Length: 254
Ligand SMILES: NC(=O)c1ccc[n+]([C@@H]2O[C@H](COP(=O)([O-])OP(=O)(O)OC[C@H]3O[C@@H](n4cnc5c(N)ncnc54)[C@H](O)[C@@H]3O)[C@@H](O)[C@H]2O)c1
View: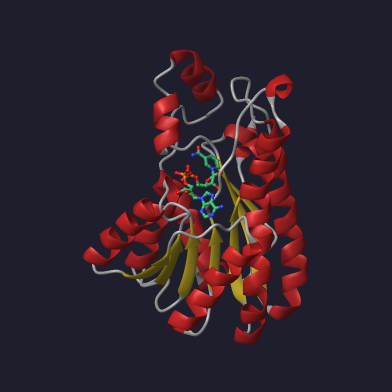
């Protein structure tokens, strides 16, 4: 199926990363006008080149730090200057620090909340007036299985708190946005073969317990997550809001 996002202006954050790059590629292939961004300018530029070479329509702001309100405002202004409206905000970009409780510093804790939760507050607040003016929109926030359960081999205290926060704040946003046709949903991926996860999987002591959690017996691919995002970005999901989509191979079902 193609053309599911035809002419929709879609902001995708973190397009330098594994899932963000795949999102930019797949959204553009569905006819979206993609606005990418990342704090990492070289990876973001690579994605931009990849998508435009394949014939997709994309523009990108990089570097931009969405943990700063000014960064999020710059991104939204950039998208409006480029396309005049915003239909979809896909909050994919994030960064976290992992440490067991006794070792976690205040800086690591704060870094994680800033780069997983504040980034969403900042972009949503900046996009809101434009979605109101445009008669609605779709906000897609990336949570995580870690916002719902604990993994024995993942020192994810701050990450769990932040992603639990993302899932909760999405429901609130759905409530505030409902009367204005602004939909807000979260996607909570399980273990996905990103570059970082691929590296961790080389350690059998880590890989075994992680795989044991997955009913389907294998990690997901970035594409598995983006398929759900395409549905949520499209009009096919016009009556879906306040939901959390578990894209986790069954991890949270047992
Ligand atoms: N990989 C997994 O197994 C997994 C599982 C559950 C949830 N997630 C979530 O999925 C999303 C994508 O993850 P990924 O695996 O592709 O990660 P990734 O690290 O490959 O990509 C994230 C991108 O976001 C960018 N970014 C981080 N902080 C930023 C900031 N302040 N401003 C602008 N850009 C910033 C990074 O530079 C990076 O390019 C994240 O929200 C992550 O928490 C990942």
